[in-house]
Image (cartoon, rainbow, N blue to C red; front, side, top):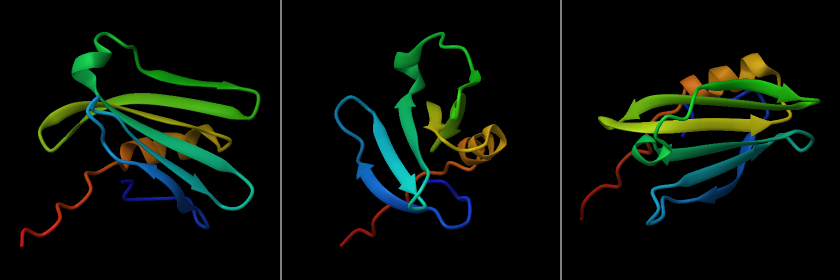
Length: 100
């Protein structure tokens, strides 16, 4: 989950981590939408970092560590590039659910 979101954005869709190691989150403010994709970097191999846009759509792909595991983190949406970078750098693991 991002530790920081642009003002007004709320989670609108969540796909939990599946057997493939992928997780996705979608956020909206009612007008703009962006998605966050988190994937095991072990499978992503030599994917380069991405910081690009096509028209109003921005894509930022970074690699980082969550819970001592390497991940690829991608933010895609109709938001400013600097905002996408900030969201990608603010990703943190979901808190573990308490054990009964």
